[in-house]
Image (tube, rainbow, N blue to C red; front, side):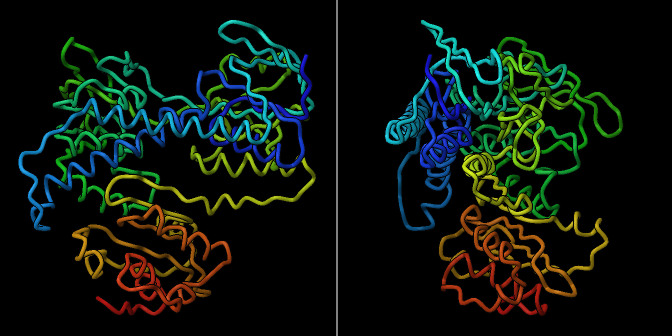
Length: 466
């Protein structure tokens, strides 16, 4: 029976990063993974494969719609969708192999199989061919999440699909219905809209990306409408039916009238839910709350001493980078250090094109708090770099405190917003004012100039280039 200082259950971004940091800090470390490859949802059926398909479809869309204006003739375009999927799979395999390399490099023992608690220090790992039992001083649970769905929209993984199946379809849908106007639905909808699918979004709320700043939702909606998206807000889905070669979605609109939608596939993208099946939590007295989340204290420790939980299986945003930070946080806490996570400054990104990125408070949140504030906005189309690259859609918005000028939130729809947002994260970590950002010299011509201009607008209501 092998003995470890720490064992991590789950090898997604939270789990494998936690394992690496634990090993770096001198702990004898094991990691348990239920599936045959490391990396969890993010690397296998989430972040990485979706970005691979987003990039491939973006190249095709550019070739079809903008190359001619650049003076580039391509002739008749076509999509080899099977090859596109093959490239995506290759990217996933390379990335997962990289995680295995890191486990080997850091001398982390990897166990393949379902890990479940016999008691708080004993874990049984049931693999494909054998059962192994290990003992451990401490445990980090990092088992992540699974696609969510509500009654009536249960996926059959054939015509009624989740994000997992959407990443490996055998054909490009002619008509794709997307239930949910959040990150996952819009990203995967973008992939197929660019490749020629007619995409219809059905959303219960009154806007897309409803948890983000309303200005961003309106701006992104303009972008996606140009790609052919159709939106149906304040619609409550009642049922989804597989009719063989088509799917029929029945919903009630805001007038409480029953309406139907038909497509050849329906992507159910109504969020994700924590995954704790098979862990044997009842054997150690560890309970989950009504949302299925494992509750933790400020150190990410559960009600069972020595058992920690991180990432999607706990409360908070379901983001790979949040899970990574928590993995490092727990490892360093166990080692007696004093790590820090500022949960108010974890950025969120939607990888459409242009991208959407945000950090801090939305305008709606600041307004509801009663705090007096200022807003500065700058349109992407006013940037020289945007006109040069023909990426003119989007806006950058900075919210600051009216009295102190401290930046409270930064929101943007912009090319490379996923990278641009980090200027705001760094600035806000050090409690910068909009004047601080406005007075920093930004290179020209770049998209980052839009951040400076929005900061100028927030600080003294005087952007230079509009």
